[in-house]
Image (cartoon, rainbow, N blue to C red; front, side, top):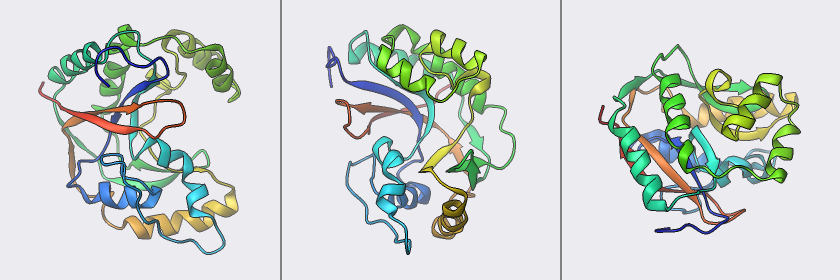
Length: 231
């Protein structure tokens, strides 16, 4: 994807574990796809539950935590990369707290287990830095977002940034499932915790941000570039 992107193409800024991090392999196996290579991964089985269906949404997006949600470009791919590189150049690497499998409003997700003051400024900077590259969402996307019954503040953020869960509404999370019923959560959460083992809690640095790309609607997201933080 070089030069002028296709109108339906989208870009996102995510955090993703490095390929040598055991969380990359285990998390990608859990959701069923490696976003680095695009290769399918053999998933664990859950008796009585359809693992592929439970993880269809995170599988499409790839293992990640959102920093700037997917958006269509109004500039060339090269210009967007330059903006992202300039952002990464002024952000310093930092330590990520241990992660754990949690219930996030019905979704299974990896969350930080203690406060990390550097996370929110990173997310805010990612949102702001690529705003000049973002095309406004169309009415269908806005309507889809509003089905979540947004608060007045979230509605304002949607109008300003094209996404309602930014700034003070943002929460670091690595999604591992669709929204689960309480009964499903009771089964799936302990299985995910055991499957991922010690990998989420390992010490790790946030040393890069990842540019994920989607070639067209419905296509899986892939890691296009990892940009080292050099601040």
